[in-house]
Each structure stands twice: as structure tokens, then as C-alpha cells.
Amino acid sequence: MLIPGIAISIATCPGVVVHELAHQLFCRLFKVPVFQVVYFQVGNPAGFVLHETPQYKWQSILIAVGPFFVNTLLGALIALPAALPVFTLNNADFLHYVLIYLGVSIAMHAFPSTGDAAVIWNEIRKDDTKFLTKVVGYPVVGLIYLGSLGSMIWLDLVYGIVVAIGIPNLIIHWLA
Image (cartoon, rainbow, N blue to C red; front, top):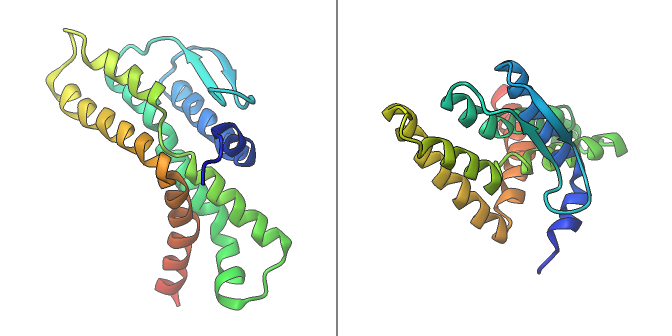
């Protein structure tokens, strides 16, 4: 089943917004000036953050992959309070299902974009890049492109479901 990316972006716009907020958060954390932020738009890209080039290349890597950490954590935390009523007690109401939707939506936008990979790639290929930064950066770029390919077979949705439904269920069963 082929669904256009724009339709997916509209249906999961909370995840796009959090993705861009995560980039902006990491920019603020590293005191990197931000010139423009578009949290959501109908089109490609669905959102973006334009910022100054960070002083250190490792900061570029962390700004690019920041959404992976933020969206993953936030997706799981938002869905966690709904997991018990929805999946264990069978007494869920509409709000619980909204929380599950938000958790999946946010978590499925955790993967950095190919644009984020291009930023990392351009930074680590420079002559003044330290060896350790290259050792970390090249595999990160490869993983981002693999994730992008995987999104063609719904890997991002599978990831969102695992984070927002699987992890809260594991926590509930672990604590029970």
C-alpha cells in the first residue's frame, strides 16, 4: 500500500513538530544560533531548522540526531500512562487512545532525515575533522540512510509502535 509522504506527515504532524523542536533544543543546548524554524508545513520537507554551523563537528552530529533521543523518550513517556488502561485493564477512554496515537506519532518521527545525514556527511568529510568524530559520524550517516530506506517498508511506523506500545507494555509487565 503506497501512501504519499505528505499524507503521512499530516496524519502524524505532532511527531514532525517534536522532531523540529528537538533539533532546536540541541541548538539551544550548544548555543548555536537558529535563523529559522518551520515546525510543520504541508510539503517536503515537512519541517526544518536553519541554524549556524556549530563550532564543533560533534555538535553537528548531536543536533542532527537529537530527534532520535527526544522523540523516542517523549513518545514512550506520552504513551506510558495510556498503556495500562488500553492493554491491561481494558477500561480505556478516548484520551488514552489519543495518548497512544501521540506516542506512536512522535516516536515514528525519531529517525533523522537524509538532510540531517547530509549535514553530518559534509562536516565529517572536512580535512580538519578529528578521527574519533569520523569513526562515529560515518556509521551514523549509514544508519540514517538505512532508516530512510526502511521507511519505505514502514520501519518508522514499526519503530513508533515498538516505542509507544512495546516499551510501556514491557515496563508494566516488569513492574507487575
